[in-house]
Amino acid sequence: MRVVSGIQPTGKPHLGNYLGAIRNYVKLQDDAQAAGGECLIFIADLHALSLPHDPAELHASTLELVATLVACGLDPNKAILFNQAQVPAHPEMQWLLSGTARMGWLNRMTQWKDKAGKNREGQSIALFTYPVLQAADVLLYQATHVPVGEDQKQHLELARDIAQKFNNDFCPEDAPLFTLPEPIIPPEAARIMSLRDGSAKMSKSDPSDMSRINLQDDADAIMKKIKKAKTDPEPLPSEEAGLNARPEALNLVSIYGALTGQSVERVLSENGGQGFGAFKPKLGEALVETLAPISERFRALKEDRETLDAILARGAAKARERGTPTLAAAYEALGLVRG
Ligand code: TRP
Image 1 (cartoon, rainbow, N blue to C red):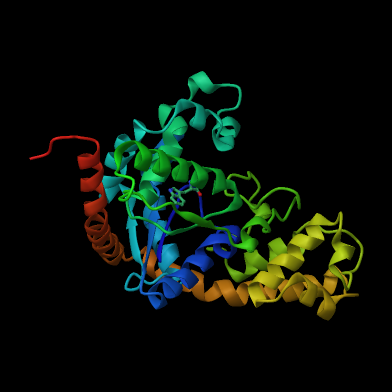
Image 2 (image 1 turned 90 degrees about the vertical axis):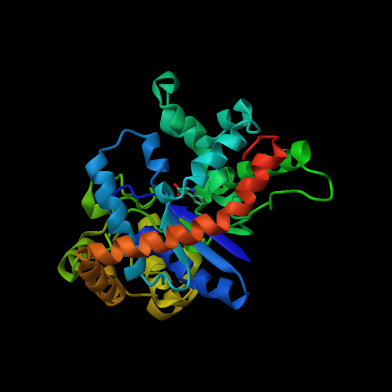
């Protein structure tokens, strides 16, 4: 079992990132070890170049994201934690795969269509070829499992298509080079919505800070955001069907369930009949209980540049080592002469 996943260093990490992705990495680092495998988690700083960005901000967010991941329980002694920019094999592999990936495949990517909108000609080519870098990220390490959100499933399928075509075109039938990776999509990933609009995902790009709980929010900010979260006037139902067409209520119940390890059904059977006046403080407290120790560790680590640099350097050294054999084999399969 080799788990590989990346997370972009844009914007401040929020509750949706934690419950949908980061918390799952923490679990997978143990699962992978137990299975005799390994877990590689990286900051996708090279992907951040695909949209206009501010260099100083990218630099700061990359370091903050390492601090956040470690504060959330990712253990650099268990998982390999690094940033792409320190492992040149990622962009190298991307180029080697660029001869295999087809324009038509990339043209069909919904993220490309959404982000480019009507102005395709004005986008960077990095935005277009972004999924090829993502394929390189996982194929380089022979990933077997890739934890991602629902929105990345199509990119993973593309990685499989690229791997398959490369294997067909350049490898003997009995010795394919690339492993076809499987996506792992945690159910919580789809569920954490904006606090202001139950039909939009909780997102770093929402202009309203009241729409999300940031992992760095203090207890007062958390309680205030939950108190102000949009709801409806009805009390909580005692069964899930009663949340149909009540997306804001469903969101708050889902968040509570994810935090306390209970299903929506179970939360409702215990809290059905309660109004939000009673349920919201309970949710706020559960959030504070989960996030307070994380933000405390984060604040201490954020100032400790030496530790952060050391974590990334060590992770990158291990990642370079893990990636070397596959990269060399890809050069060779393509007929490239290297000394
Ligand atoms: N594109 C992913 C996202 O925006 C981040 C990412 C980059 C990634 N490379 C990856 C995820 C490789 C999984 C595997 O969420």
